Amino acid sequence: MTWEASLGAVVTPTGGVCFRVWAPAHRELILILERSGHTPLEVALVRDGEYWQATVPTARAGDRYRYRVDSDGPFPDPCSRSQPEGVHGPSEVIDQRAFEWSDSAFTPPPREDLVIYECHVGTFTSEGTFEAVIERLSYLVELGVTALELMPVASFPGTRNWGYDGVALFAPMATYGGPDGLRRFVDAAHASGLAIILDVVYNHFGPDGNYTGAYSSRYLTDRHCTPWGAAVNFDGAGSPEVRRFVVENLLHWAHEYHVDGFRLDAANAIIDSSPYHALAEVRTALHAHPRAGHAPYLIAETDENEVRYLGPTSEGGFGFDAVWADDFHHVVRNLFHENREGYLGGFEGTTAELARTISQGFLYEGEFDPYPGRARGTPAREQPWRQFLYCLQNHDQVGNRALGDRLSQTAGRDDILAATMLLLLLPQTPLIFQGQEFLASTPFLYFTDHADEMGRMVTEGRRQEFAAFTAFTDPATRDRIPDPQAESTFLQSKVNWRETETVPGSATLRYHSELLRLRKNDAVLCDARRGRPAIVAAADDRALFAQIETPAGWRAIALNAGDSPTTFEAPRARTVVVHTGEDRFGAAGSTPLLRAGRIEIPPHSAAFLSG
Image (tube, rainbow, N blue to C red; front, side, top):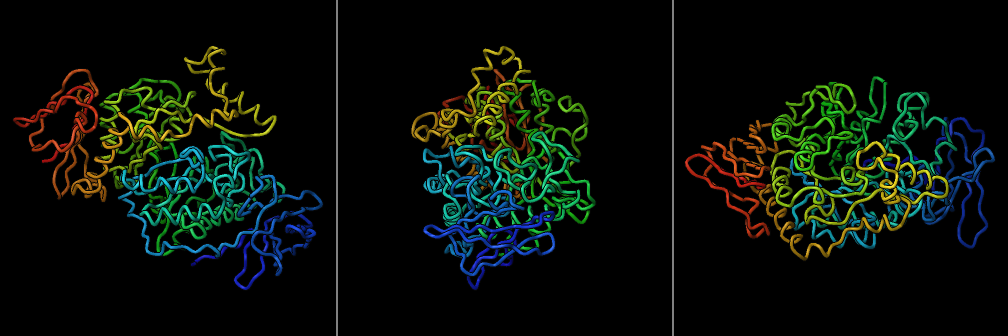
């Protein structure tokens, strides 16, 4: 490895374990080392600047340990690599060198070839484990995706959670399979040819089981606030060590687990007023310590439409590879099912808006957005298309709806197939949310497993969250919102794989596979992803015609979301390559008519054309 861990419990090459923890203001730290059948061993750590450390020659992998801090505790390690008894229990020593990897021949796909599939380990299979996801890897390869994005797997309280309440950020969740389970999973994914992207959270810590405050009050700051409480301290006193904690966490996932990329949750809530932003530091560190010659992909989730994320660090940017460009989702959602409440309020849902979004990358480039009540966005028209991540569904856009309903519950299948053609054939980077590819009927609900008062607060807060929405102004209606704390809410969210074996699931799955085959093999589509050729998009009432031209040729996507046929001038079109109404896709709709330089598109359909 080109990088060596320095935080937490690290098994040394010569034997024994080095324990190291940041606790700048404390007078004494005592390591309590536990081994089955033995009396706990207490070792006083020695101060090393703001850190405390001790190397214990007799310690080994599998030992449990905690720290007593100035007579308080004992507490788990904030950099624990394993929490086998939950986030409130003792930490476990893990030998980061013990696993025998077999992925030395694997090379992650180029950034322009990413087709991302987002999944939640706990609901993707009935078992809810890394091992069970391995059984689905061949399915994902056949579908045509190139990268699997895991919602956060860092340890969280209880046994079920989305993962954004993580508190032991170095420790893979025990109920998923823990450290060895994650390593086996990544190794198997690489053997299948799939890259692994991990969702990570640095904008806040979870409210239950966060023990960083026992070691230092400087992990968090009251100088900034996030929607989830106090912000992580990236720019105040002690922030260099907090930034080190975050950088080491990312390098630990990349080197100890061979993770190929990261999606940083709510990057806009990583607040840093210092001259050198923490996000730029993250990018620099990951490129300075690549694993096997590959610097991980970096993707930012942000609603800012801010080009700074994509600009080079040498020019004040953050150097990320892509950003979630949710304007595309918001326009499509309102095009097929108007909902002008909340953050969707600034989107009319017209094909004119959709054409503008596709041609620009973002819809908002500095215009006033009524939802935040301010101007939002910057032009990013010089950036390669691959840097805009588009989706029709994701965990937020499904799970943050009161009933966790998917697009297939609010839009017709024909319209979804039409929108899917845009998603998968445009040069922007597509993301598919688990089950979307076969029109999964199961919801994806918000679920947690907090204890006692915290659990009651989550239940009540979830229902109050929707009080301002028209459909839930009546308290009796709000009471029908599934309780996040109920195990049944979690179980309802598990993907039903039997739906892939029957129509319409099987036919819709075939459609997605065919489009991804075209995306991979079509010379013009491949060419377009490697740069920024213009996308000329024209709109007519509820129809859209998007053209792409590169040195390799000309292609177009024609979409009609209206109830009547529509016709576009298409003098360069020679062939209808694929359309949504084909029998093989279970649609049996009308065929587009291509004649005399014009293309007539039937209602609620789309076609891909070549010249």
